[in-house]
Length: 221
Image (cartoon, rainbow, N blue to C red; front, side):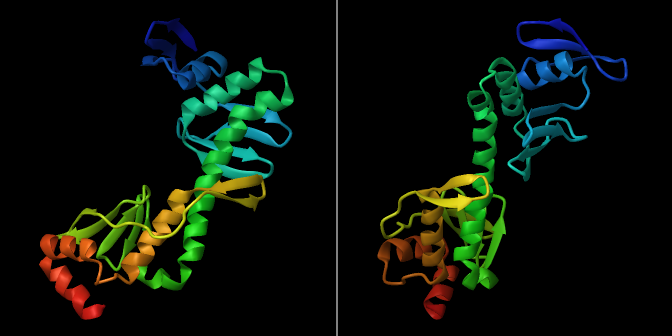
């Protein structure tokens, strides 16, 4: 229950009868004003709804029969409030639709990367922040390359070759854009799978930063 609404925080009475203080955000206001601190559930239409899990701020979301978990609590709360105040079925759903598609696209991007790089999966390791190559190199989710030096990944400047642009793929929830950044990641991973040892920009950085790795690469490539 919402007891007091201050400028930058709210005072609430939780389900256990305890008075507590939370930041004044869309999520906490919605949770304690409209749901008395209980788990949030909201139905946008017959094919779209959100159900908060037993972990605060984490939501199971359904859109056009696709299910995914979204951890952006304030954006979920904004989507709910927007829908409540916009009776137009298209405009009212738009913030939730865009949020779902953005998170769904992230998963699609990863699936595309794994599909393209599948022939080399024995040399790759997909982690939260990017892709490791042979435990020597790393390309993060922003397409920034790194080389390993004494157990630490250090920045590596390489340039992705070719013409990279966004393109659309069909999915169960409509067209999803595959961004050029994903293609840049692929291009840099492919370079590091088989480095061009005649590329002096690349070799000079490795030779200076990790001479032992440089000798390994000369031997292998």
